Image 1: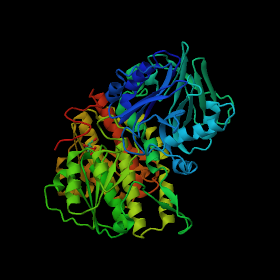
Image 2: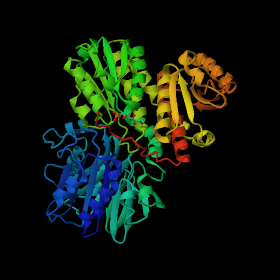
Image 3: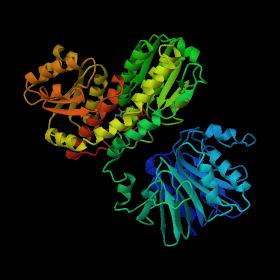
Image 4: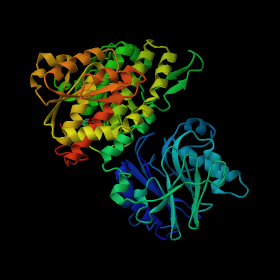
Length: 618
Ligand code: F6R
């Protein structure tokens, strides 16, 4: 997630900005930059890659200023390169801006400036152009007023931070659906994406509320609403140290990322419908980065989904979605296996390679093996500009933001969302669903973030269960249909962070072997939400219970009372907006269960032994 820092009123503002950016590094980024503000000139230095590249560029430059703004960028629009790094300026260099979020209407806004050349591919740059235009129009230029007018026309999520040559000591910020903190201490004004960047200077901060703007000067901070009326931000005193501040008060990144899932899902679903001009009675689902001709997609007769680990489990949901909605046969395969056999692949085979990092060498190699045989490849990635995203013919990004914990959580649920979108899109392209049907399903999917919040509220009950079973050496996860990928994922989460033995089976396979493992006191986690296989799951639960297993059942609102007679413990999911969306909900309690078991056992959940976040070797 992008990081912002602004400082005004210190002779060494540039050093302060660099130190602030270092504190924001944990958020993940692919480029960094800053602007030193001055009355004659805004001096911008920015570099793709690590902060060290920026620091290297600053070395010996003698750049100093009493005010400036800095940014670490996590790319959402445009490749991560020097040109797309922030800050961005208008063509005259009068206004500079940094931004965290997505300006959804940036293309319409760019069209308001037909004569202007844009220096980057970003959604952000247009904001600097528009503020400069407002300043040009004013007899008595006022940066705050210019920003206020521009912000009124913005759509999307943003925390924006501006500086201008007109008022080099002034920083103006605006917030909507992306975090922004302001502060003032000892004659210095500050703003930042989160308290980690400010904690070295002050613990007394104020979080802006959506729709607020602030004018920050060495004299103080003035906050208003979008109409310019004085408005109160949420002021508080930070109790955390720097390390805790990076985790925003959560004990671990994994827990923070579990709690970020409602936002991550919202971002991945955001802005997927375009107006079809009334042609087919509604909007069309569009996946804009998917640069594969719809006519080619309509001719596909087979799909391979290739991935590793958790991403593979998301792919298993993808299979269900594509077969159900688009009616195309799908194979899901471990990427490291696919590349060493002779898969039957041709130009009519679509390959979907799923990788949050986009750098997993097995997945990249498998995708290129398929491309060699002329199969079009779609990358489903979280990291913009990653190797897979660059090499694939088309890419669909999950917008989960960077994931620091090694165990994938928020990227997993957004991969499932990505798979559902692909299933719907292929159905639309092949004429299997009317746009209005697609739109209806998409609208229902918008209920998912709220449903995840409801599950997160059950954390206390899940922690109690974890306490009870933290010493259980072996846990078996069982599921069917949409529950099966989550059984696999539940087992993977538990084993990778708690080092306890856990494995998953299709519930129907139990009687063909695995049930021999069940004895008095075994633990079975059964995925039994509402759906067409529910009664089959109840039979499987009865089978293991009769042989002495303790059963934790994951049920849903409509099935809880039936399950209570058969399982020792029932965790209840809210009603899912679609049966194929159940996996997104069902995975949340299992993430929390694994997390609590691991912390009770004193394991390092963010950095489990023997594992790396990105596996770039075979
Ligand atoms: C498990 C986990 C791994 C990754 C796997 C693939 O929590 O994170 O199993 O899912 O290494 O990584 P990506 O998705 O980056 O290709």
